[in-house]
Length: 127
Length: 107
Image (cartoon, rainbow over all chains, first blue to last red):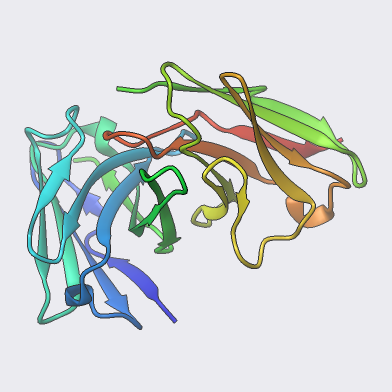
């Protein structure tokens, strides 16, 4: 059964870099077929997609965060990681990793959704 | 970016009630709309993808529909475990975006 688990520091100082890792179990990232994503949720607020990566290293990011985000993959460890630079208090959030599923519709285009998700990792930005 | 607007932002209901949550996209997304349920301190769980396709294992009291430009999530006969926050998400184009959420509380 596919499971995802986030790990990393729970506290980051302003202007520093937030780094998180998602460990995937029950499925090989390098088996292709899926993109892997980071999504965040500030306390008491909604969900924001940060970016996604393919096992080959192909990435795409939210334009609002693109200048500060790097997502990388380590297929040997079956992990993918998030780096977010120059953090501020506004980056305080629960960070989720998730698998992006993509299925062809009857019309020929693709449905895209996130499932499953990791349990989430709270990162607080504070001095 | 495609903006997703949910309504209402919250509602109060009782066990056994039928409830409907609406989601509207700022531009056409065909039927590329997904619904998630999130309980406090937990990750979201997929309920419906492609506007009306029930994810495997999700109870049949959940259903999704599209009418014009509006997408709806309906729960018939609300159960105690259904009190949660529900989010829509468009899967039409990046950046993937979510609605602001609808909290379903016990009346």
